[in-house]
Length: 258
Image (cartoon, rainbow, N blue to C red; front, side):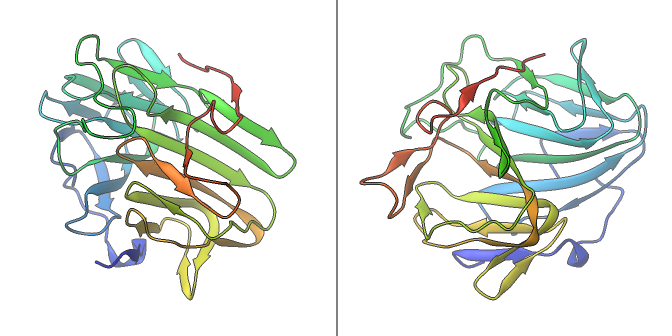
């Protein structure tokens, strides 16, 4: 595993066993890990049959489930397609697929929540499960993008960072770096990093402080971006490191919490 790596879904066959060891999967499912072995972050893509359950015990860090299709019921609430469930560290809970569902599940290799990041440790009292709908908590929506934070590491009780962006046209980032390791999972279209191609269902791994640049194809790209803790971006576009959060990046507070 290098500072930049691409994990191809085609090289990770679907299996009956659920790869995330923090969760017990009950019922019919097919899943695969689409993240580098031994990395600080992991990502599981799974298809759940109607009625299948994901059961968390208490031994896990902050985790999130993005729902690609179908819906998940959790604690009497429903997370629809294009929404996300944030399961805060140490919370025991069960999610049930209301219908056949396709999900992307992310989490940290270390179950102990971070304490030395940009925002310090999260509070342990009051942790629970957050269900965030398709509009996200913070959003930037115009003719060039639909970008939403499901969690920007600013909650009192978690430090998870999860963003989704849908770019309908060609997209090109500046050369930049982030202060946290990250996983970028492509939901539609493709991304290019140098000569590497990250297609639909594939995952890009980038280590903290590694400078890189992203390009999409002509038809744009839709991806989710996951980090374990609050992150700052360093880019020629900014005078200094920029804390990457909804308010600090001038996004609109939407709060589509279910």
